[in-house]
Length: 605
Image 1 (spheres, rainbow, N blue to C red):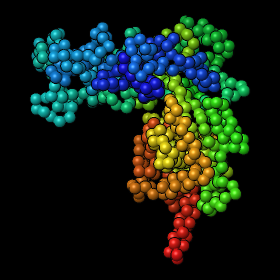
Image 2 (cartoon, one colour; image 1 turned 120 degrees about the horizontal axis):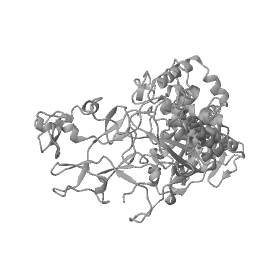
Image 3 (cartoon, rainbow, N blue to C red; image 1 turned 180 degrees about the horizontal axis):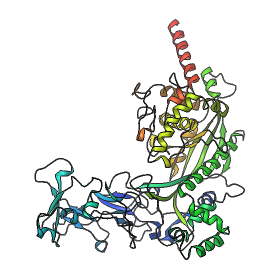
Image 4 (cartoon, helix red, strand yellow; image 1 turned 90 degrees about the horizontal axis):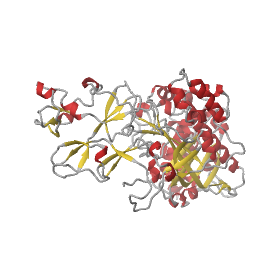
C-alpha cells in the first residue's frame, strides 16, 4: 500500500500519471481496472447531464493507517527498468516479481531505483519503457556483441567522465557492448535502432500497432501526463435539465466500436442501438461521429460557466439575504458602503464595479476525462480503456470552500473594449494563441477576457496578504463570454477537502470597505513592476510569448491557482501606457491626485 491525497487522484496523480513515492515510480491505471463497488458516488445532476455520463464517482478514502484490506485504486510500477545504486546493475522488473514491497537487488540486496528516461508517443499518448538492452547493443563492435543474448546490464559513469548525458553509459557485462546516453534525447533516436511505439499504456494487455514516432522524456517531466479535467461549482439545479446529446453519444459503451470502423458491417446496427438506448434520432448519433470532441468539451465548459454566472447574478438582486442551497450559500454585498463618507477615488472605482457577491460556502467538483502526453495537441487518451460493461462514469473529487464574486459595469466595459488601441493590442495575443501548440486548450483572447484574467491574478496576489489563506490555495474562475449573452465577472475562491476551505477569511475580505481597499491596492501595484520598464514595454513574454506586460514580479501566480496556465495576461489593459487606455486608468490617476493633495496637506502641517 502507498498513499496519496484523495484530491490528487484526479490531478496531478490520476490515471496515466507518474507518482514518486519514497524512491519508487508508479503510474495510475485506467478506471476499468478500479473496483467499482469500492468507489463512492459524487452527486451532481447538472454536471452529469452536461458531461453526458450516468455517474460521477470518487475513489474510496482510507484511514490514516491503511492495511492490505483497505479499499484503494491500483497503480503499476513504471518504468520497470531499475538499477541498483550500490553495484549499478540494471534489472527489468516484471509484474510477476511484484510482492508489494520496494524491489531489492538480487546481488547486493540494496534498494533498486527507477531509470530516469521513458519513451512517449508524440501524437497518440502511448508510453513505454526504453529497451536498454537494445540501446547498449545498438553500436556493436563485433559479431559476438551483435549476437549477445545473455544481457547483464550495468548503468555507470563513462570512463572519460564527460559532463551531461554523455557521461552516463549503459554497458553489457557479458559481451562488453556499451553506449552512452548523449544521443538518447535526440529526435528519432529510438527509431534509428528499430524501437517502435507499443501502441498502448504499460498496464494494458491487448495493444494495437502504432506507427507514430517516439520521443524520449524524463519521467518527471511535466508533459509526460497532461490531465484533461472539468471543474464546476454545485449551484442550484435548473428547473429543466440541459441535456448534452453529443456528450451522451460519445460516452455510450458502443461509441468507440462505431468510431473505429464507421463504414464497417456493424456500424449501422450499432448506430441504431445507440439511438434507441438514448431515445434520440440516428442523425444525432452520426453528427456526434463527425464532430470534434474537444470543441464539444469546450462548449460544455462554457455552458457550466454560464450557469454559474446566472446563479451569482440572481443573488446580486436578493437584497443581501443569503440564498442558494446548503452547499451553495451566497449573498449580495455592497462595494461602497451607503451613508458613510467615501473617498472620491473609491466612488470612482465603484462606477466600474457592477456587483459583489459573497460565497459563504461552495462545493467544487473536479472531473477527469483523460490525459494527453508530450504536447497539448496530442490525442486525448480516455480515462476508461477497457470494455464498458455498465453505464458510463467518470472519476471525480469534491471539495468545499468560500469565495468572492465580482462583476464589472458592462456599459463602461463595452465602450472600452471597442477602442481601436485596445483591440489591436489584444489582437497580437490572439494571433499568437492560434499559432501556439496549446492554443486549442485556451479560450479566445478578447479585451474583456484578458482584462478579467489579469485582474483576477492581481486580486489573488493581494488577497494572499490578508485573507489567511496561502497564495497557492486561492483559485480563479473567469466569466467573459460575449455571445450569445454578455458576461463580465470573476470569482476568487478557495476550496479544500476538509473544513479548511470554510474558515471565513476570504468572505470577510469581500465585505465593504475591505474589497475596495484591496482592489485599489492591486491597481496601484499593477502600475509598477520590479522588472519595469522591460516588463511594461515587453512585446511578448512567457510560454509562446502569450503574455505582454506580465511577469513573476507583477502578475503570475501558482499554476494550481490559474485556470489558463499563466498566459493571456497584460496589466497595461488595466492601467494604460500612454498609447493604450487602461480600463482603470482614471482610478489610477485619481489615486495619484489624492496622494499629491495628501502630501501637500502634510507639508503644510
